[in-house]
Length: 241
Image 1 (cartoon, rainbow, N blue to C red):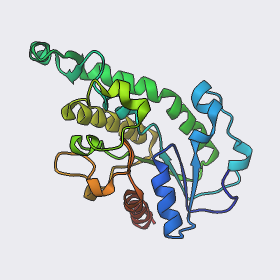
Image 2: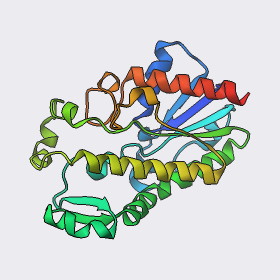
Image 3: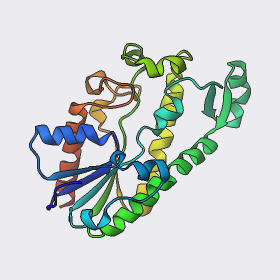
């Protein structure tokens, strides 16, 4: 549970907020407070709202910042599926069939992302009601890590079996990330919130996370990336105020 006080930014999210928290600690910036939802076992595994809302409601941030479900695109497609698939339009069907890949229409994949986000968006709505005076910001997650870097990350024994299938094609991984980005940004706009995209200086010309901003695993960004996002948030605050 966070310290009770008056932070400018209350950041609520999952594993991707660790980079932001470490950056705030390094910079000794006390205007940021963090709540990691991964600590609430019943919330994520059973969908039970076991957060102490009375306690967190004592915090009065100027900005409520969400970073939710950021690894969903990786869950869907960092490793080649047991039935290889691609995302596209019906006109792509025969081409993908020749390549041995099952075609999933874009709108079907988008519907699946929306379904997976349904609970997290309902949670954010409840939190927004608690912090009704705060401006709402949804942060995009870091983009996928390049194929080249994936190939030499320490894979660990629990990944060994599924990695025998190899990594999914980079085009698919980017498509999944773009669909996720569209789902989150659309939700933010429809809610009247601000959508904060991934910092451009951390992304290569193909759309992958630059190596200098990668963590030491398959999916996360590092402290330097966290510093870029904090910089974005501070600038956004200045622009608004």
